Length: 166
Image 1: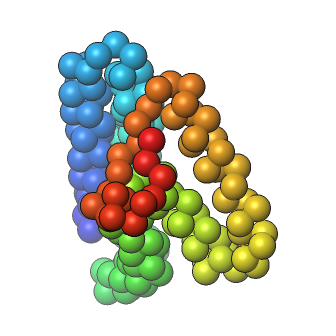
Image 2 (image 1 turned 180 degrees about the vertical axis):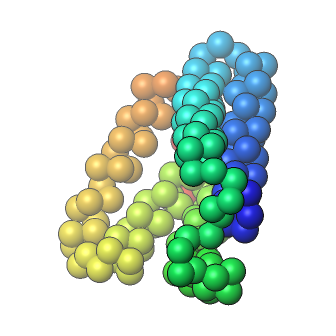
Image 3 (image 1 turned 180 degrees about the horizontal axis):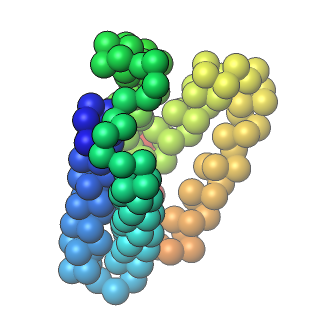
């Protein structure tokens, strides 16, 4: 394995390990509280293991000698990887902004603000449509919180700003 193929394989193994650890950690939660995290963790672990298996099967079928596509050099592979990273960077910043929003405003408010802004800025949806599309999410979060007696995490500024925290 060379270059991107090795990086992809290592990344998949790390993802599998993280989800295995998360599933194992969730086993110590109270019975009702562990249902969702364990379901997500074990499903993601299964998908990661399937992807690792597919990667290994493709590698074995292709043979050890063919690691770089025909006509591609190591430099063009690095340039393509750099291009992909640059293209994905704005989405990484959106995710970071969402986490900062959760930390400052709380989960419920940050989710609404994030979806509203993401739809408008990235999805180029007009404000009225974005508001109408965000409302069902907030309703679902509110109903889910009420039905399961969940308390969504508040943020540092939730109390000071009088934001909805349940």
